[in-house]
Length: 121
View 1 (cartoon, rainbow, N blue to C red):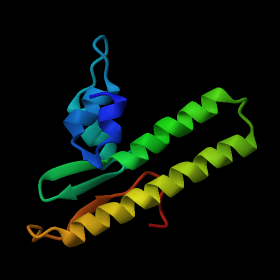
View 2: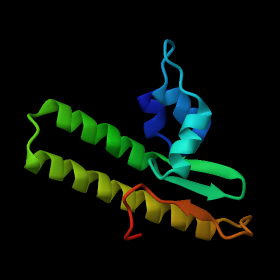
View 3: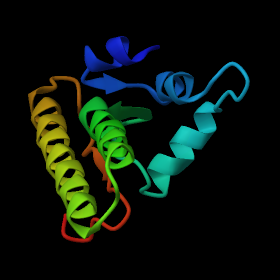
View 4: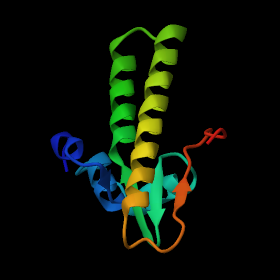
């Protein structure tokens, strides 16, 4: 999976996320992604036994990282990146909740895994 593939999706599986972040020399295990979701390091939505990773927060993290790398870090640029990531996370959460509400086959209450440090949600 490459960046173009990722940009065309709303959600990806932990396996696909591992394939995206890993390299041929340094592959990433799917369990690493699942553990990061369980620990709140990345956002994930769990429907029954299936875990889905929303793409917008991943893209926001990549974009924020790219923006920070392109400029000399200072308080303003770091704050701007944090706001961008927060807005993308909120957008993804709303999208995920709307998808869950519209799903016909969901019988259990879904478990939303929060991003670390997101105590307000």
